[in-house]
Image 1 (cartoon, rainbow, N blue to C red):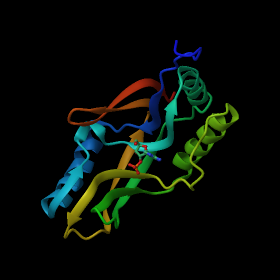
Image 2: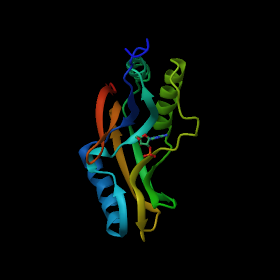
Image 3: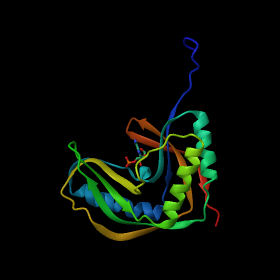
Length: 183
Ligand code: 2AM
C-alpha cells in the first residue's frame, strides 16, 4: 500500500472468436501472399489470428469476472461465418491489412448481445460501429492489391476472453475464459 491507496493490478482484455486449424491455415496463406509482396511489415503470427468481438482494454479483476458473466449470458447456437475479402487502411508508417468478414446475422447478433450484456454491467466499450475483421499485418509496405477472395466459411463453436500481453517477441494472447456454444 502506498499513501493509503490499494494496488489493483490491471490487465488488457478483449473478447474474440478463435478459429479451427483449417480456417487458420487458409487465413495464414492469405497473410503469406500479402507478406510475399511486401517490403516490410509486422504480420500477425499464426497463433494470434482472431476475430475481435469486443475490445475491453485495461480491466480490473472484478471487470474481468463481469466480462465472463456477460459472455455466459450471450450464449447462442453454433453458427458459421464467412471471410470474403482483403482490405488495407493507409497509414504513414505503413498500412494495416485485414481480412473482412461478412456482416452475417448470427455473427452480428452475438456481437450485439455481448455488447449489451457488457455495457449493462458497466464495462466501457468502443462506441464505433462494429466492423468484423481479422488483422493480418501492421506497418505494411506492399504492392499487394486488396479485393475479393475465395470465401472462407468457418464454424463458430466458442468465443473467448483473451489476455493481451507484450512479450519479448510481440504480443502474447492467452485465453482466460471460453464459452462453448451448445449445439
Ligand atoms: P485490430 O486488430 O483492428 O487493431 C487486440 O488488440 C484486439 O483488439 C485486436 O483485434 C484489435 O483490433 C482489437 N481492438 C479494438 N479496439 C482496440 C483498441 N482501441 N486498441 C487495441 N486493440 C483494439
